[in-house]
Structure formats: structure tokens, C-alpha cells
Image 1 (cartoon, helix red, strand yellow):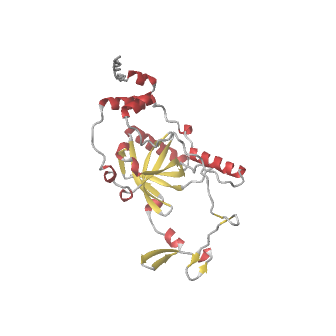
Image 2 (cartoon, helix red, strand yellow):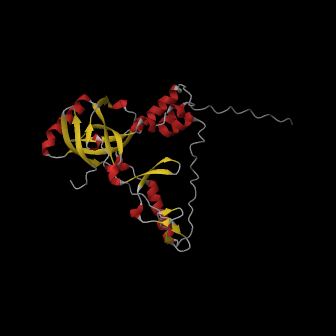
Image 3 (spheres, one colour):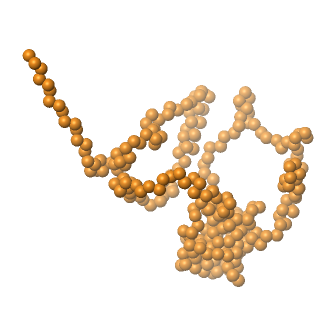
Length: 283
């Protein structure tokens, strides 16, 4: 495999150990990177490692330190940090199995692909994969990577396994604090029917390739226009048709309009006010 393994070790289930390799399942998107520029000279700004009262320092003079009290640090060498013994540095022990729906989406962080390290590990790897698939369970354990120990989940993914790092409980805000002020009202039945019909109409299979970063495209177009304008300031006009979603007065009418002409035709037409008979003028 051409990619470099992010982590190498073993998955342990009771007395069974499976040598595996873990690879990152995601990559950075095509983001537009900006540099800070000194406008008068047009040159990029660089940063130096500086100590107050000393000035610029060499990289080989820098060590890691942990502040134990105000202004007091315990200094650590990198090899001292690397020597910290933690079993999860090389072993992912599956200590618990849960149903996938029991893990709130807020806890999921980053996915990784898990593959057997060699041919000898394939049989045990396949047994674990199929056992998870048949029981519809997610395996949980802890794994140390890049200076931190993570909670991780393990579940089948095609012919392999996917591991996802999870946030700890104290890293997730409680939703109740944000949702408390939202009223617990029952929606109007007709409005709910229209909303469900609109959802059904727009339901289709998920295709991630159909989405792309339009903001990146717009920034690239802006850079190109700016280049052709020889630095002249360019400010796009705001879309006059954009209401920001704050001016919807008649929710029923808006939902019917979203559904199109068919729904609009079904809507009961409002009766026009009767015209008053003209008053006869006296001769």
C-alpha cells in the first residue's frame, strides 16, 4: 500500500490479537490559503521564535514545558515523553460492544481505515469483521496516537474495518442548555403534511460527489478578477433576492410554493371581496 500507516499495532479481543495497520480515511480539501503580506513592499510576513528579553532563539534550544504554577515550568525532553509506558500505544483492546445508535453523533470525531498487517492476520481479521456485522455491534476501546489517548469505535466497512476517534464526555456540550427555550409545541397537521411531502420530493441516494466547496470557487474567481483588474478593489453587490429567511410571514404559503404549482392549485383560493354597486347620482 502506497500510503504510510498512521498507526501500527494490534487489536486484542480477549486472548486473540490481530496485527493491523491504520490509515487516515480523510484528506484536506482544496482550500484557498492566504498569506499575510506587508502592503508597502508586497513581501510575505515571516515569524520568528522570540523570547522576551532575549530575542530570537535557535530551534535546537527549544524544549517542551508544562506550567505547574504561574511562571514555573517543568521541562521535558521529547525522548522522555516518548518513553511514557501506555499499553494502548501498541494495542487496541476491545473492552465493550454497543449498538451503533447508542453513540450520539456529537461524539464522533475522525475516521480511519483499519486493515490486517499481513497475510497471517487476515483470518482473525475477517472473523472479527463478520462477527461485528452479524451482531450489528460497534466495538469500543482506547488507543494512544500522536501524544494523546482516544476513545475509539470499530465497525465493518466493506472488506475492512473503520475506526473512529470519539470525544470524551467533558469535551461535548450538553444540548439541553441550547434547546431549553424552544417550545415543545405540536405543529399544525396540514403544515406537517406539506413539510413531509417536500422532504419526500427531495429524497434521493447520498452522493458526496454532487457537493463541492462553492466558497472556494468564488474566492478563486475573485482572485482572478482582482489579478485582471491590476489590484483594483472589487466588491460584489449583495443579492437583492436574498431575504435571509427572516421575512417568511405565511408558512403555509411558503411551503405550498416550495412544492410547486400542484400544491398551490390544491390550496383553497381566497374569495375576492364583492364589488359594491355604484351609487346613482341625483339629477
